[in-house]
Amino acid sequence: MSVNVKTQPVLQVSGIRKTYPGEAEPLVVLDDVSLTAYPGELVSIIGPSGCGKTTLLRIIDGLIPHDGGQVKVLDQVVDEPPTSIAVVFQDGRLLPWRTVVQNVEFALELQVHRRLNKQEKERAREFVDAVGLGNFMKHYPHQLSGGMQQRVGVARALARVPDLLLLDEPFGALDAQTRLVMQDWFLSLQRRYSLAAVLVTHDIDEAVYMSKRCVVLTRQPGRVKRVVEFELPDARDRQDVRSLPEFGHYRSQLWQLLRDDAISDAER
Ligand SMILES: Nc1ncnc2c1ncn2[C@@H]1O[C@H](COP(=O)(O)OP(=O)(O)OP(=O)(O)O)[C@@H](O)[C@H]1O
Image (cartoon, rainbow, N blue to C red):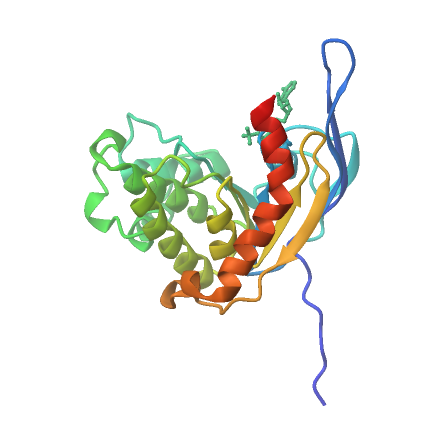
């Protein structure tokens, strides 16, 4: 007899509320936002500009406090930045005076609070290799293309061996073609490490292509308008998923959900 054991979620965000002090009165930015990510699952967040997507990521990462609700990574309630989460930013945030491998080492130095031993330095090199930059170990960030810099950002995040990866518009600054290449590249890496990840994006196609599930937020205050599950073939990068009728269906479903908020934002 097979026993159906439900996998434990890596991330549980429950009923998050966030208010910033406003000029006249407090600004409610997030209201009752919940989402869940299981091992190996990439969940996207999409919503109009200013609806609180980055704020939500920063709350998940324990960088800023919330006013209600709870964030849990595995069994741990998050109330300060945990070592189990790593973040990839839009602009890479590499240290310009450090080489590629030294940038990855830096993430490990922050974890262990001392100089790295030989084994740890080897681990940094392994992750630079894993993102396909083995021949660029000693290059400096300014000697790399935007896509390569983002790969270093991902290597740096992976080297920490996180339980959860947060991606804040990671390909937003790249040109359209590099972006598509990077999406495939990241998906294969995510499968390889069976990573749970949360992706904030403004790009509807990217949300459908990359994620298993998309949380659509309303305009301010950000509330969950809908959670859309995408029933598309796995290993999407190996198939021409974008040409499937279902892909078009999900793309138009997300646009319908965002449209009114996007139009009223543009008219403001
Ligand atoms: N530290 C802060 N103090 C006060 N208000 C803030 C602060 N940080 C963000 N806000 C406000 O909170 C709202 C949400 O900001 P946030 O950056 O989370 O939105 P977003 O959905 O990521 O936006 P975008 O899509 O444009 O990147 C905005 O109105 C912003 O001006």
